[in-house]
Image: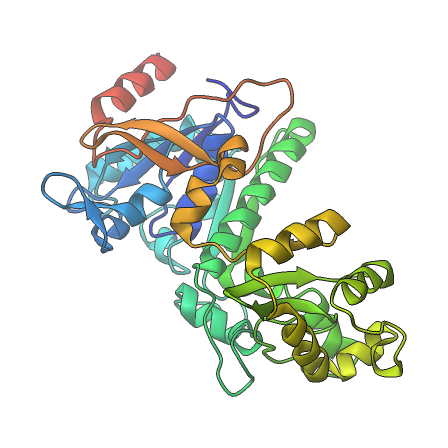
Length: 385
């Protein structure tokens, strides 16, 4: 297979979004990803919608988002036959991904010790809601719960009194991303040690891990940050501004950019309350009002052109359909075409990585439930033979 991980086999026992996203990232890099699903319905995200697609309106577009470049086989892990198949697959895999609640894999007969008896080189990625240990280690967690518990909702929304969830399932997606890069590191370490290891992350860890300057505002600065709407919590002017026909975003990160914007909008950049970022932030409401009074004289196209000519970061606020119609999105390979067994040719959001010197790789569609049972069994027999 094409890609940096073309000789890696991933056994994907996960479902919903965090684990499947991690496995999909590894598949994007060329790994052979074998997704194991229960024969009665499979991954629960196959039933999540709307919207649904297909002639019978039964194909979840949610499932399509997290399962490209995978083979689907069915097995009941509570049955002797299902456990036997998992044992065979574990022996032939490099990576196992699971996001069961803590202890479930153990009860199914596959604690980490058993997995490494079967295959000492196996890298295991375990994704949980709040961590596998600690006072709340066994607690179940979904994305929105984690967004709230990990503080992200307190930073999002129009004001501290109105916490909002992030529109994307960002806790799940970040956990998948962190998990995938943890797997890559463990695979690299295995080249030296010859042994696999367990990589652990959680929705809680993933969100807390991207607090960044919000975290240090509290741990070092002693200030509890809160939601600031569409404006930055430390930089001004930096946010969304109204003009004659809607809103644009302007991001001024240094004094040189500020002077350009001030001159364009006929604002004195040296007036005391606007002379430094510290002063501008302290008088942010006044600054926004002054800027929007000037911006109201022209439409978005005018201001985006003028700001672009000055080299000041600015942009539109696009809807999802506009993003995928944008030439720049398409030029970056962020849409891929695949041939789905029921839907035929469809476009999917593509991988965010590109590698110089490599042609774009071909991607396969998210599989139908059990689509590759025979193929995987034949592949197993060949490897074992």
